[in-house]
Length: 101
Image (cartoon, rainbow, N blue to C red; front, side, top):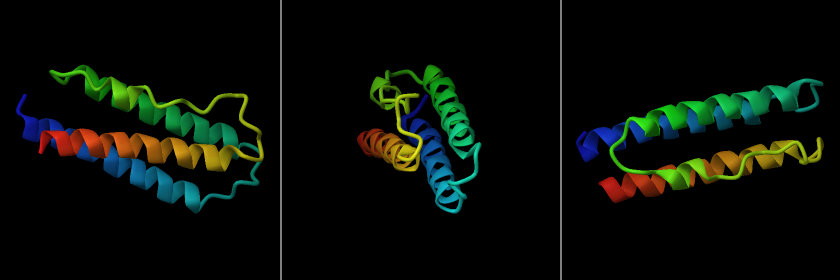
């Protein structure tokens, strides 16, 4: 698989993280199920990343090793933790894309 194609796939994953962040910023964090909903959204996104990386010819473990939001996160602090996780994933995607360019 050419580097250009790999970079394009990673860029698509990056755009998805931007979309998730925009949706998160517009969400009502006070909803009773908001924390569980966003944890499931991030888990789905990570599953998509894992699936994409499995088809690539080189390891991108750094993207997969971003610490996940755990149950230990205080319910009041979870929006900040989700944003930090998305930012860290996007930073690692950007680094991988720039290495390929």
